[in-house]
Figure 1 (tube, one colour):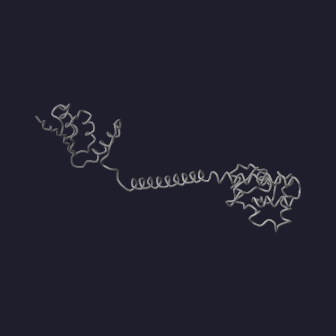
Figure 2 (cartoon, helix red, strand yellow; figure 1 turned 60 degrees about the horizontal axis):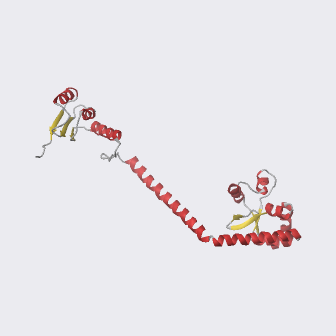
Figure 3 (spheres, helix red, strand yellow; figure 1 turned 120 degrees about the vertical axis):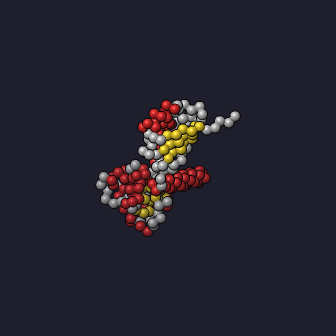
Length: 243
């Protein structure tokens, strides 16, 4: 038994009702049309094209009516019958089958209302969770947009924090800083070695470099002289070791 929610109202489609009553869909609608005064808008209404398409998307074209209309089997949009409209059909069709089926359908509507009422709190929690998720997604998107906008309008920061294992990222930053230097470079590092000279070799011509390091540095006088022969001018100074 197929029921749907259209315009915030639980309804059944004319083709599904016709199949239950054992009549043609057109015959069912003609009977309702002949008794139009018994079927006001809140008993029976015709779907709009948007409503019909929305139903097709939601239920995967599960009813014969929707399949027929999609393939040209009927030339008008389906009619939807509310709970009151279904009850009125039993009087209009006037058959034992119609009365028996109407009773079953009405029981189903009642059971559905009880189910909805009994689970109202659960539905409300689900709705609240969905709203919170949507709000979280919206604020997250806004934060990312602000970050991207800032990155697009500002220069990269000169100071950065690197974590364990990010050796290449740190090396890349040092090289970029050395290359941007215009006057002089001052480096304070207690454990410089030949690898440090490889970084300083990236400096522009004419830029001096001063390294403050531990007296027991791995750099030798020969290392400094060899470097200065090609990339002048490097000066190595030692920090004073406390007694």
